[in-house]
Every structure is written in structure tokens, then in C-alpha cells.
Amino acid sequence: MMNIGIFGGTFDPVHNGHIYLAKTAVGAVKLDKLIVMPDRLPPHKQASGMVSDKDRFEMCKIAFEGMPCATVSDWEMRQRGKSYSVYTVRHFKELYPKDKLWLVIGSDMLLCFDKWYRYEEILSMASLVCISRKNDDTTQKLRDFAKYLTDKCGGKIVVIDALPCEVSSTEIRESIKKMRDTSCYFPKKIVQYIYEHKLYK
Ligand code: ATP
Image (cartoon, helix red, strand yellow):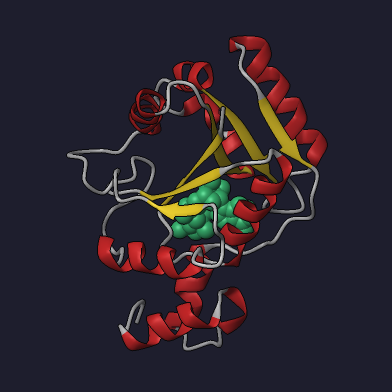
């Protein structure tokens, strides 16, 4: 049996916070495989103003090329309509029926997990592994919320006790527009990609 992580996001752009979450989750729950899954039309975000699917996909490939267990999947990008996580988890459950699935998420996603479409079904098919992304989201607060969720609908949620890496794609996009130096937020090759493709201007 393999431990397979699914790491979904808009990755607009992918940044060090994503890489940190992925690496920490892989180590914490011993993932054999990590599927990085850029979404197509995120239900909780406006689709307007995003860079192309291809650019987000390419940047993810660059960001995770140094992680042997990681692959970037275009499965959600190839779906029609909105990309709800429950559809993705169902698909991978069918593909890997004997393996254990994990959803890799940051604390903002955990704290609104009970608003996700068919979240009970997700928890019946996959476990969650979560890390804090800001100081306010303490490990205790996240563990309390995880307990509320699992008491309500079962399943397993692992909250990793680690310091947050406080960075977001929104902040980065705004900083690039204001011509600030953003090179500390991602690997050099991503800085180069954004510059060469004139993204977020
Ligand atoms: P935006 O600012 O555009 O909302 P974002 O930085 O939140 O973007 P997403 O692509 O929406 O990035 O996030 C994908 C996943 O990565 C989510 O589960 C999110 O919680 C997690 N994540 C994003 N940034 C961090 C971070 N700094 N630390 C830990 N997890 C993060």
C-alpha cells in the first residue's frame, strides 16, 4: 500500500509556502507519491485575472522538479466546468483503490473545510494533512477544528506542528505589480519564468 498525497491549488503563482507545505507533509505522513494538481476553475476564487493554465502548470513543474516523489498532474485542468475536490478524490480513489489517499492543505483550507462541496464524502475517501500558514492559526486551534470535523463525520486529519511560512500568491502578485523584489518568495527558476513570460504585470 502506498501513501499518496494530492496537493491541489491555484498556484498563481506557486511559491515557497507551497513547497514548504509539500515537503513537510511528505515527511510527516511518509508520502510515497505527491500529486500536485493545479485547478482549472476554482469554485472559491474568481477565475478572472489569473495567468494561463499552461503557465501555472509549467511553474509547478519547475517548483517541484527537485522532489523525486512529486508529479504535476493536469487532470483537473482537463475537466469541464468547476473543479471540486470531491471529483478529484473520487477519480484517484478509483485509480488507486488499494492505496491510502491524503489531501495536503494549508490551515485556511482546513478551517473552511466544512464549507467544501461534499466534504464528508472527501473525508470518507481521503485523510487530510495540514500545516499552519500564519501565526494566528496555532496548532491547538487547528487540532481543535480537526477534532470537531472528525467527531462529526469520522475520517483522519493530521495537523503538523511546524512554524508557518507566511507567504501568499495574492501578496506576490501585488508586489510584482508594484515592481517590488519578490525573489525571496520562490526558487530562482520561477523568478526567471515570471520575468521571461511577463506575468503579473
Ligand atoms: P491566493 O493568495 O491567490 O489565495 P495561495 O497563496 O493561498 O493563493 P493556493 O494556490 O490557493 O495559494 O493554495 C494551495 C494550497 O496551498 C492551499 O491548501 C493553501 O492553504 C496552501 N498554502 C498556500 N500558501 C501556503 C503557505 N504559505 N503555507 C502553507 N500552506 C499554504
